[in-house]
Image (cartoon, rainbow, N blue to C red):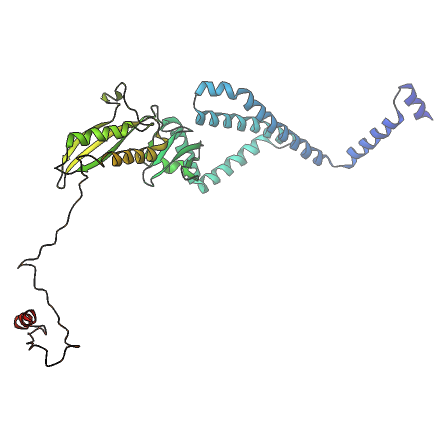
Length: 342
């Protein structure tokens, strides 16, 4: 009766008091360590979502600051890892772990991992150099010279570079090896790419007509730059329009060299095939002939002697001419003359 009157005096619902009593009983029953672990887990989950919120809020500012997707992603990844690390230390304090012991254990564990995972550490260091040297960027079209693989850079991390090939496959290249390989970047600054095409014509062909037709065949392709201001590379300027030069007076004909510029490097093989097709069709009704080597077989007194065997199986013995065998078991000159007379 006293408890009921007390509850009425403070205006507390009796049902609520029952819930509070159950909660108090649960708290007293469950060990304190369990609550500490649950609290640490909640802190880590909260830190995870806070890190995502921080990255989302500062992402645009960092992207404007660095203006490079690869560096932006690396910096944002570092910020997110730092935020999560702060909440890890908070969780460690909730679990009543000594921060010094945690740091010491982490240092020892990191040293062991550094010895075991030395290749990954080398890739991370190389990744820093790749980000600093800026040989290529996400979205650039590159070619691995040693493998002849072309594709687009899909991602650059501290450990590896991921390339999306033109064959619709992925290549993951460790940064420790990509710094030692020859990489062609087709998208660096100016995407215009110069291509060359060799054409060997006979000495009897009309060379000027061949040069004109070759240049015209390239200009008829849509992706080929047909004219305009000269294109500057370093201190040298090159004609933007297709230009055909006499490269060499070769053994089998005159070697012509066509140079032309493609607006974008993404369809080089298709553009080159279209230029060759136009050139092939243009040479059909002209006084220009493509040269190719001819081979003649000549037999003379220095070429040796051909041995001829004559079959006597189906010829009657009475009609057979006298055959004198030579020292090598072959008909002599007299027997061959006898057969010719018949």
